[in-house]
Length: 126
Image (tube, rainbow, N blue to C red; front, side, top):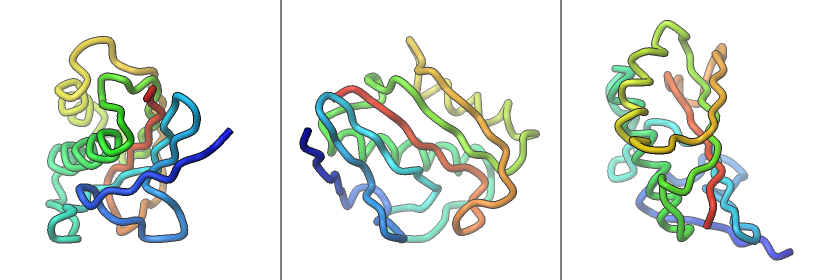
């Protein structure tokens, strides 16, 4: 098995010793994306819907660079700061995964990098 590192300027650069994603055989495994605007390097507004949308756009950019897409995602994991935001997150999430949504886990966490409200990672078919 050969692993291929995936990197794109259309999503935030890694802020630690990790890759944006890794391709292995017919799969791509993304690192968690947080709501950083790749054009500015800054966090977007503190509104959960805006942050969720930015995270999913970042995730999509990484997947496209890897030769995949949101439509080919088989599993996501959501890390959220406040479970009370769950319904608002679902509203935005549903707009990105309109048909045949992937399997998903959602975990409430104490803190995320840069004090983000949400982080999402994915596994997709290439």
